[in-house]
Image (cartoon, rainbow, N blue to C red):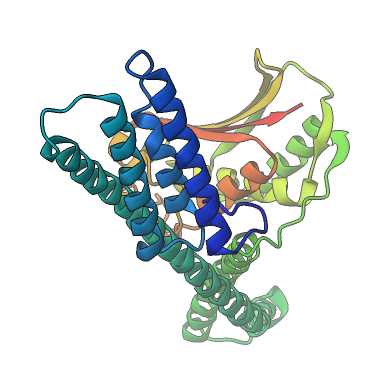
Amino acid sequence: MVHFGKLENKFVITLFSFALLSFIGFLDYKTGSEVSFLLAYLIPIFLISFYNRSEKTLLTINALFAAIIWFVVDSNSIDYSNLFNPIWNAFVRLSIFLIIGLLILNIKEKYKNVLKLNDELQKLNDEKNKFIGVAAHDLRNPIGAIYSFADLLLVDNNISKLDSKAIKMLSYIKELSHDSLELVTNLLDVSKIESGRIELSPKFQNYIEFSTKLMYFNLLIAKRKDISIKLETTYEELYFNFDENYLSEVFNNLLTNAIKFSHQKSNILIRISITEKNMVKTEIIDEGQGIPVEEQAKLFNYFQKTSTQPTGGEKSYGLGLAIVKKIINEHKGSLGVVSEVGKGSNFYFELAK
């Protein structure tokens, strides 16, 4: 949209347009039929139409002046057999000027409305994120306490004092509170990321050591399904800058998903390599159920689930991969998946070395 610097005076803009049209008419008259200036008459019309304070009246005045200038040039340059022809030509040109100018004004008005709606949607989105963040934060502490108390009651010293029914109920309480705590934590992450409050603190550190540590952490979960996790790489050390805290979320989400959707006694492979573009590529490869091709495109959206279900009755809320995508984007990296039903999945991400 044209603002003409700080110029806000419609009278000055109109004078400028008149002067430009007069100059174009003068050139048209002097060059005659040898050089065509037909399209040049539209330049001031475009400028007026895009002027930020333009309106229909201002456009009509300038369009009328453009048609008159063109009429004068034609009348003095071309020998018409009667006066009707140049008048008719001037009327047609005036109509064209007005149609083009009004179309631009209409488009410009719609553009302003879109910008206004975008601002309103952004405000609503910010309020939504704020509400989710506050609600999730307030819920996390009591849910965490419920989980901790249930876990405390189920330790060896206390479990002998409880009957089987009470133990079963406490196990349900512990499981449900753990799932709720995971959901609340993910909602907090979503709120933080969407509101732009994610701030990376990258450090120059050994990525192989970092990956190995997270692999061992997730092995404890994998053992429940008798799943093995192995790390495959040709590098003993691989140093570059990354945020350990947020990248841990990426690793844990991808590994947890691989475990959830893998069959018992299967294998998960973590492969780390360097691409031709000198990017660090990390692949989490499982032997699970795989994901249908038509469902893969929506995997990284919030609250999106596929027809593939966890093999051990685990919960899936459709938030983890969306969070992973945001974190990888913040690292200026890329994320993708290769999957085939019945053969497993390969979730991979690449980071600048």
